[in-house]
Length: 116
Length: 113
Image: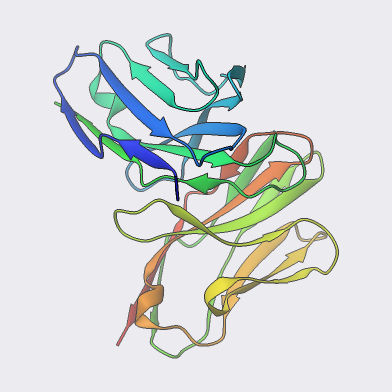
């Protein structure tokens, strides 16, 4: 596709509900990132994939957060038993190559999650 | 580990005036440096990046930034701003060989008519 596409753009979840956020990276991009951006703050790293391999998940805040990219393209970020502190914008980004040098990463518009 | 500081959370400036958005970083290893812009309800867009070579980097929309290794700074400048430059600006670093981009808290630039 022309850019990184994320869905849904907006999601309101009741506390305790499970949510799934989808990311379609730019076609052919090897690297895929998930970031969490709380209101008024900068994005914070959650996890990184190179193709289908999840090489770094050190930023996932708890075991309620799970990400996958089974075929090396589309990725899903799943949050189980959502809590109010999970309310944030979840940004997906992709990069053409594996992380090397200063490859540019391209961001999607984000999925805005509000937990009530 | 790396960290990024953006001391100014908000910067109001009149149209056609110059602006400087400050960024300082901390890292025990060499890093690449980036500036991203985020318009309301949109994702982040790359403005410019420093990888190596000339310490003065020019980006899109007339922005430029200068890498100062001794001061561990990467300040963003524009000589004359437009109303359309109103947005949130994020400085980011990435360790050479690493994959994680570390972002600062952002600076909200408001251009006033």
